[in-house]
Amino acid sequence: MDFSVVADNFKFLILQGLIGIGPFIGGTLRLAIPAIILGFLLGIAVGLARLAQAAWIRVPATMYVEFFRGVPLVMVIFWIWFIIPQLLRLPIPEYGVALTAFVIFEAAYFGEIVRAGVQSVARGQVEAATALGMTATKTMAYVVLPQALKNMVPSLVTQMIVLFKDTSLASIIGYVDLTKAAQIVNNREIRPFELYLFIAVVYFLCTYSMSLLARRLERRTA
Amino acid sequence: MAETAIRFSGVNKWFGKLHVLREINLAIGAGEVVVVCGPSGSGKSTLIRTVNGLERVQGGDVVVLGESIARRGVNLPALRTRVGMVFQSFNLFPHMTALENIMLAPMKVKRVARPEAEKLARALLERVGLREKAANYPANLSGGQQQRVAIARALAMQPRIMLFDEPTSALDPEMINEVLDVMTSLAREGMTMMCVTHEMGFARRVAHRVVFMDEGQVVEEGTPDEFFRAPKSDRGKQFLSKILTH
Image (cartoon, rainbow over the protein chains, first blue to last red):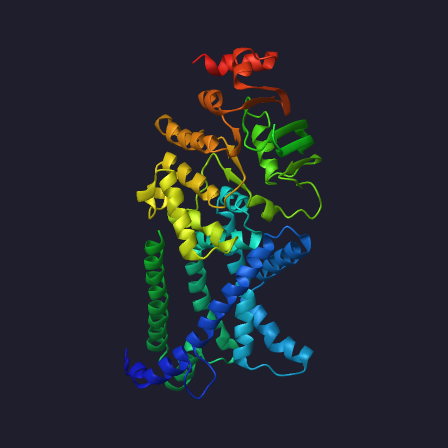
């Protein structure tokens, strides 16, 4: 084993692969962070729509969730990569494809977490707020969502970690994330064991710090 | 009787096939304290919940402070600000302190400024005897204390009517009186109150009128004296013999 291959290419792997600074369009964090934020925001909308009384809001949201939960993520990435540019007759860059795919795919999962979280809040809470004259929107914003978010933290963090690791799939359309960066180096140096072990450690350090952060957050809000 | 605060006329409601409210006709005057009692499943909680529209009626109407709740386009949130409600299970917001629980609705619904809302909330906590508990979260309050905060929270909207839905049923016996005391003083101040409760002592001492319900109907109504001494109906007699013998 010779880890000098990692040391020699450290800058490329971390700056280009993990962060996204370099000659190529890429970066695991540059994809994962906006995907988590936008996916969660869209997920809130999807989750609340799933709970709507009006069927014309609830039914499409349910179909959305069932559909994207039922197809592989790779498929969604391919569709956007191959089909959307043909339909719209304009090219979409790798970053746009990957981010779009992750946001719409993950929103289905986040939506289910949000729905379960909202449903975990006792009915009496809604009744108490309603009886005080609060509208449905205010009840949701000030009474239900703050409690629901707290209940959601463990599942949300799990889903964010899954999303973070899944960004490695963006490498299949040429997006230079951590996985693709290791591939590029490996094609030249043929040091698969050292390189893939190294990026595994980097992935783990990132996800483990997410876990730690979540644990602190849970303890503080408990 | 002075002006009418709540008037039920021909109220009907079904849960699926179950006819839970049958042709209810009842009027509650401003400043009146009415206790609704009856066996469980008699529809008394459902009845009280129609007053602020937590349950919609399917036949008839409830006119509350001159507003028909069955009318299409009725502004229920606006009406609810004038009708306070206290629940069996308190339903305090667990993520807020006692003070914040009381301040929330005045600030978010009536747009009262924070300092003013806080002043009002502290005064209300004082009134229910919980001045030192302002910073406590509900989890750190006893059941009786939680229910007193819940009463203060409802009063913060300065309602004209207060609804109590079995406010002491979830309490340990030693905490019941502290809640009843607050309710009694509220009644003495002239608040219009509709109370679903099994506290017959409270009904005797405080209520102007007792309404006895069974199987979705108002079986009889009268002054506490009339009802407790000589119930007119057989069902009323049966009910009283069950709850008063122990």
